[in-house]
Each structure stands twice: as structure tokens, then as C-alpha cells.
Image (cartoon, rainbow, N blue to C red; front, side, top):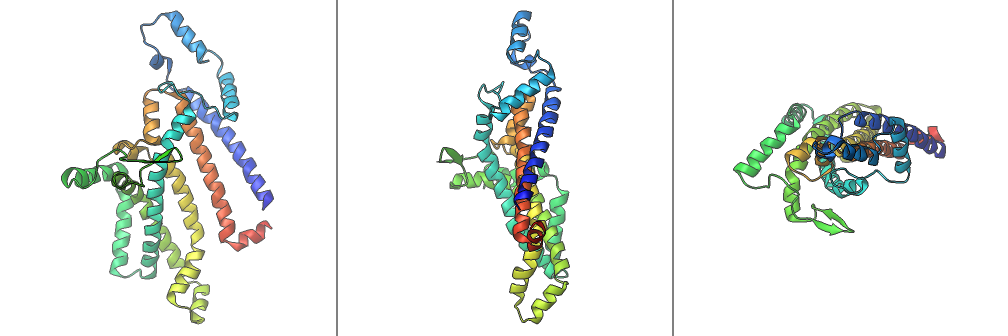
Length: 323
């Protein structure tokens, strides 16, 4: 097991190095932030001094090596627009995206898996057909349209929920959280619902497929022959055996939602990382763009690493093979 962990950590380091190079070259090939940083009517000398101060006059490989040196020491640079350390800026926006992502993905999993298992257990029933129809809508409808329709119905016409913003927050250990207040929950509901519908449909179909395959297997027949109740068969045998693909999809969707909740955060004016990266792209704030993409890659790698560890905990065959 230790050898497996070391191998995965080495792979993660190589992947992070390659991704950082691709991100750095890709971002620094787009636009010229000098045109945003200074006025176009300044003198040529001021323009040259600004370029030298930010190091844009050096070759790209030297800029990349300097970036790696700062990155190793935890320095992502300073934002051109906000004039503050990029890491502090990202960490200030991370809690908002984190609670929105967890609310969406956890809600979709906790609701979608039982619904999918029920649809797979009784596939010919009317409730199962309704569940599958809802899953089709979750795949078919685009996220931005769902968000706009929810705003129009629940915020504009009915006036039950707010149309945007984060609402009241509570400070815990210096971090602001909105899900701990009633007003914050009201602001969180619509964006979390918008973000969770696709994940809900995915979890329903995944759990239904696993249920249909597992319910016909031999170990389920043997469990029933032993006189176990259907609840014990489903929860103790079927759910445990279909949990590996569910954990895989949960980890991937958690990382993807955390990284790319851009559309939802923009529609609902949610002050998270998605809105930050959109504003940074519009203003050519290179340090923020590079740091965001590198941290997204790091999140994907770490979540996949934790999913692999969860595999070993759920499947004894993997533990035996690695031993």
C-alpha cells in the first residue's frame, strides 16, 4: 500500500509540472495585460518601465522558471486588478464555491442514488418511469436555461427566493459561510438546485444501471436463499457492490463542479471562484488565471488520489492485490 501511495504521488508531481507549463504558456500567449494595466496615452518610457517591472521583457522560459520558483514557495504572485496576493484572493472566494459545490453534489448523490436504486429495483412501475423521465430532463436541459427559468419563476413571479447574491454569512475561524443562516440558505437554494440537476440525473442512471445488474447476480440469490430481508439484501449487499462506480463519479463530479461552476455563479451573481475567473479573463489578470487553473488541476489530482484510496477501503480484492 505504501508503494502504491508513493507511485501515485510521483505521478501527481509529474502531471502537475506538465499542467503548470501548459497553463503558463497558454495563458501568457493570450492578450497583453500592459494594455489593461496602464493608460494608452502614457509615454513610451513609462510603458517600458512597467513591462520591465512585471518581467514581461524576459524570455518566456525565464518567466516560467521564476513562476515555478515562486510556486514552490507558495507565492502565486499579485493580482494586477485587485493588487493583492493571488492566493489570498482565491482563498477568500473558495468558501462560497465550496459550499455551493458540496450542496449541489451531496444533494444530488443523497437523492439520486436512492431514486436510481428504486428505479432499478422496480423498473416497470409508474414511479420508476417518472424518475427516469426526470433524469432525461436533467441531461437535456442546459444549465443556464434552468437557472434563468428558476429565477423567473421563484424570484420574479412568486417572490419566494432571492435572485442572486450570497445573503447573510457567519464567520467561523475567519471564514464566511452562508449555509448557517436562514437568509444564506434561501440565497443558496436556487444556484445549488441549478447546479445539481445534471448530477442528479447522472446519479439516478448510474445507480439504476448498477441495481439492475446486481439484482440478478448470484450473491443476491444466495443472500435471499439465506432468508435475509430485502432491505438487508439491497443495503448490505447491492449498495456495497455498486458503491465503487458511485464513488468514482462522485469524486469526478465534485472536482468538475468545484472547478467549472462558472455559468451558475455568473447567473446568480454568486461571489465564488467562477465569477472571479470570468472577471480575470475579461481584465487579462494573468496571475489569477494561472493560479486558478493550477489549483483546479491540483484539486482534480488530489480528489482522484482520494478516490483511489476509497477503492481500497470498499473493495477487499484491491487491498489483497496491492498487498
